Image 1 (cartoon, rainbow, N blue to C red):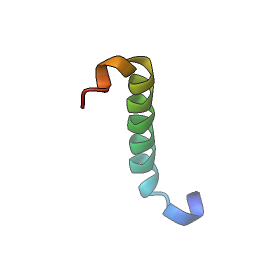
Image 2 (image 1 turned 60 degrees about the horizontal axis):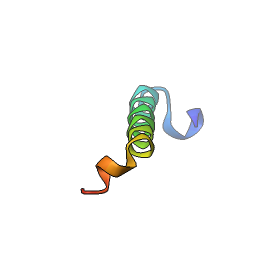
Image 3 (image 1 turned 90 degrees about the vertical axis):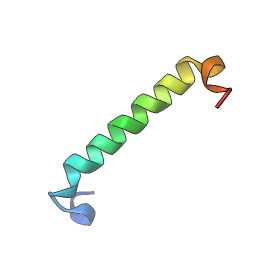
Image 4 (image 1 turned 120 degrees about the horizontal axis):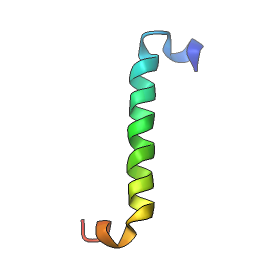
Length: 37
């Protein structure tokens, strides 16, 4: 991953990953709430 993206992209990548994980957890936690959208 380091070689592919380089040092500058890592914080951006990690932020995106963290956001994705958070959204995924929210979706699995409250499936009933998110089914509407």
